[in-house]
View 1 (cartoon, rainbow, N blue to C red):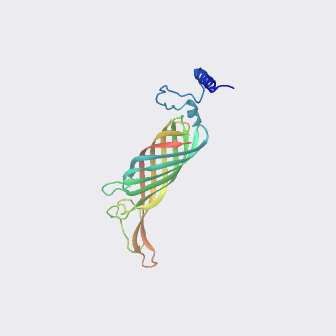
View 2 (view 1 turned 120 degrees about the horizontal axis):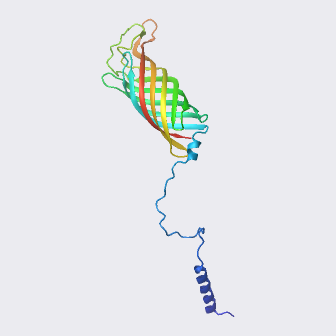
Length: 244
């Protein structure tokens, strides 16, 4: 019969032998005591940059700031607001986007005071991997509150009228019209799924403004409105992020 002290000696000898065996480098149970330092973020690789030239869906969000200048007497103002690009990269040279923006329009001394919105379809030519040029066409509009400026425009209290000139402008404008844009963008790839870019855009808009007087025509009880056409040109600078 084996004595208990002998069993204990054998167990102690076995444990000492196992402790003397060095741990494997790939052993998941190995405890790492060395200071491995701060983790380093990887920079975009050439593979990431090439992936952005391949076809597929793109979605971009950003913010732009600029100036909206009225022509022929139309009021002017500053623009600030978000924009969205959504569409397809067709191949290495071309993309097709739908772009939307909603901007606060503000000006002093009777300038714009309200919201400007615009939506365009933008065929985009990728001149290089980073540089692109887009030409868009679509709709644009303005929404101003009552009393945005002192109203010196012609008035007829009996019927609705169309005012041929934007000078002087009506007291407030609510309406839509045609819009066009030319946009130059420079993009930086920041990973396999995201990029960031700067955009410089030149836009034109021709808005059919309708001012509702609140009066009714005596003959048919239809609302009396004044219509005026406002031409604008604008320049905006934007920054955004795009995902693929």
